Amino acid sequence: MTMIRDVEDFLGLPRIAMVGVSRDPNDFSRKRFREMCDRGYDMVPVKLVAEEIDGRGCFQCLQAVKPPVEGGLVMTPF
Image (cartoon, rainbow, N blue to C red; front, top):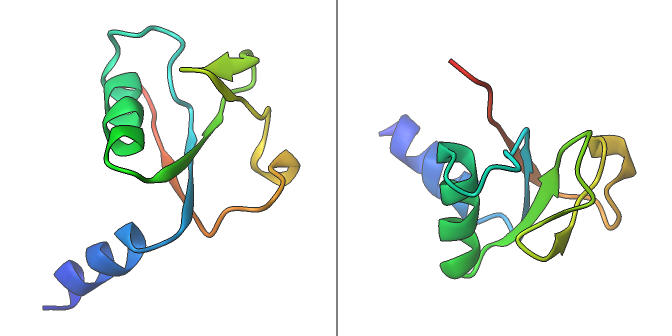
């Protein structure tokens, strides 16, 4: 199954950005960010108006992330 393999490949990336992660600790995106960090993923928060998310330095845009990430999750409101 190609879709499952794609998901496994993505989750195998060493460094993943979460673009649009919320500053609200109770928001869905923030909970997912925290869960992925707890599971050992090297998550990088990207949020225009935040300096840090859960103790991790936050970047204003993907281009500013150093070292660069190999993949990204984009979180948008419904």
